[in-house]
Amino acid sequence: MFQIGFDDAGTIIAEGRLDAAQAPRAQEFLDAVTEECILDLGQLEYISSAGLGVLLRTHKRLMSDGRGLKLINVNRHINDIFMYSGFDKLFEIEAAV
Image (cartoon, rainbow, N blue to C red; front, side, top):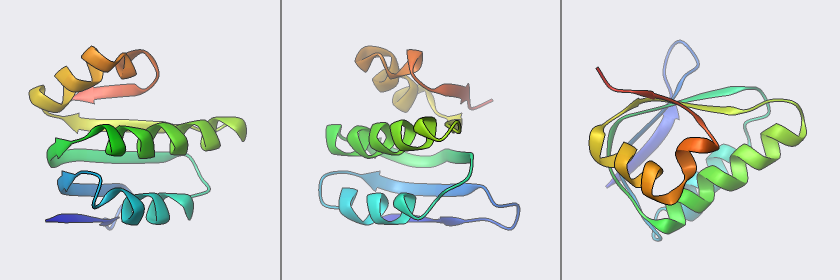
């Protein structure tokens, strides 16, 4: 199961499994974001290469307009995936406490 949406403060919350089956829905949601965006991954259990692609496309689009994508509450497992893929060098990432 995958859910994505805004919380009351305007932070985007993603939870569940962001895999190839859910990537189009996540991309559609993130394509509507036009401002600098904070994405809370505290409840994300899994991310596939398709999910990484969604984050990369969104980040590149926002960067072209002088904005960006900040990832927060990233758990150790997801952070390891970002490190192995080199995404830790592309994104501003705050690890979960």
